[in-house]
Amino acid sequence: MPAAAPNIAALIVAAGRGTRARGQAGDPPKQYRKIGGEAVIIHTLRRFIDHDDLGPVVAVIHPDDQAALAAAAGDIAGRFRTVGGGRTRQLSVLAGLEALAEAAPDIVLIHDGVRPFLSDDLITRAAATALETGAALAATPVTDTLKRADANGRISDTVGREGLWAAQTPQAFRFDLILAAHRAANAAGLVDFTDDAAVAEWHGVQVTIVEGERGNTKLTTKEDLDMADVRLMRAGAGRPAAEIRTGFGYDVHGFAPGTSVMLGGVEIAHDYALSGHSDADVALHALTDAVLGAIAAGDIGSHFPPSDPEWRGAPSERFLAHAADLVSDRGGTILNLDVTLICEAPKIGPHRAAMRTEIARICGISEDRISVKATTTEGLGFTGRREGIAAQAVATVALATDEDFSR
Ligand code: MG
Image 1 (cartoon, rainbow, N blue to C red):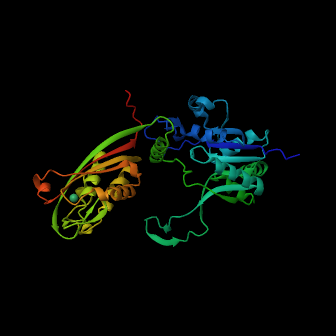
Image 2 (cartoon, rainbow, N blue to C red):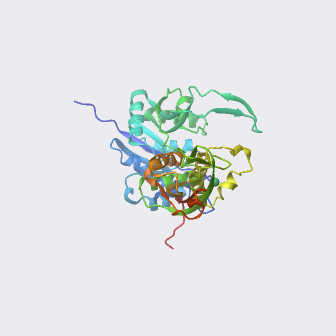
Image 3 (cartoon, rainbow, N blue to C red):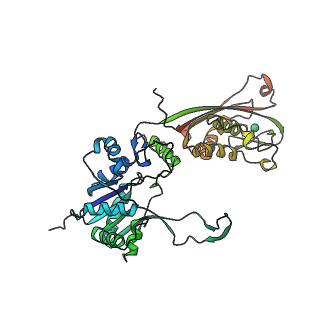
C-alpha cells in the first residue's frame, strides 16, 4: 500500500503594521493595498490555496484587519482560516503554529503575506526538501558586491559574497520541529527572531537551502507596490491601473566631412558624417526627448549638457537608456516608440530592422513596440538640400497609478 500523501499546511504571516509603504494616514496596511486590482495578501493566499499539494491555509493577521481581509477575500473566502497575530513577527508565527497544533500537519510552509510572486514549483521544492531534511529555506545567492561602512558612510572593507545567501520565504519545516523550536524560544523569553529558520537554527535544527526566485520579492515600499502593479498589468492579470502618457521629441544635426553616420544606434556608411557634441545620433536624441517628455522629466540637454566634456563623442544609447531608466524608476514601462527620420540620404530602409533591434535592446522592450520610419522632403528645405538630417519621435509610457480616472 503506498504511503499516504503528506499533509502540508501553509501559514501566511501578515500581522505587521509596517508604515514604510503607507502613503498618507488612513491608507490601509501594505498587505491590503491593491495590485492588479486585488489586495496583495489575496494574491499570496491564492498561490497556496490553488496549489494541488496543500492542505490547510492559515493567515495570521492583525486583529484590527479582520474586516479588511473579509472585504478583500472575494472568491477565496472560506478557503482559509485567520488567526490573530502577536506583537512581533515571531509571536505571530507561534500563534499560527498553535492554531495548527490540533491538525498536526506533517509539514508547514511559513510565508510572508507580502511576497505574492512565488511559483508553484518553489512551494513544491520547499515542501519536498523539508520532508526529506526537516527544515528548508528559500534563498538566492548574493550577487551584489557587499561593503561594510561606518555610521558616516565611509567604507571600511569589501565583504566576500562567497557562501552568502539572501533569505526569502517560504521556509518549510517538519511541523513538530518548528513548533518545538518556537515554543522553546518563547519560553526562553526570545521574541525577536526575524525569520523562522533563525528560530530553528537557535534550537539546533539543521536548515537546508532551496534555490529561491529573483521574482519572489517582498513588497516593502510604495515603489515596490507600484512596480508589482505594473508587473501584473504586464501579465494581463486583474484590472489595469495605469496612467498612459505621451511625449514628443525633435532633433536636427548637420552634415560634416566624414564617411559614416550613426542613426538609431546603427553605423551607416555615408558620404558625410553628422556633426554634434556626442555621436550625433539624431534618431536616438529625438527618442530620448520623447521618453523624457512623456514623464515630464526635462529634455536631453538638461540631463546631458552639451557644455559637459563628459559627453564629447558619447554613444547616444547612454542618453536613451537613461531616459528609459527614469521611466522604470517611476514604476513605469515604455509601451511604444515611433521615430521618423527626415533626409534625402542615406537610405534608411536597409537599416530599419537593425535600428529597431538596437532601440529595443537599449530600452529593454520588445522590437514589436519599436517603429522606425523615413521620409524625404521632396528636395525642399535643409534636408532637401542635403545639409543635415532631422528626426521626430513619439513615446507612449504607462505609469502605475492609484487614481480612478472613471470619476
Ligand atoms: Mg541632438
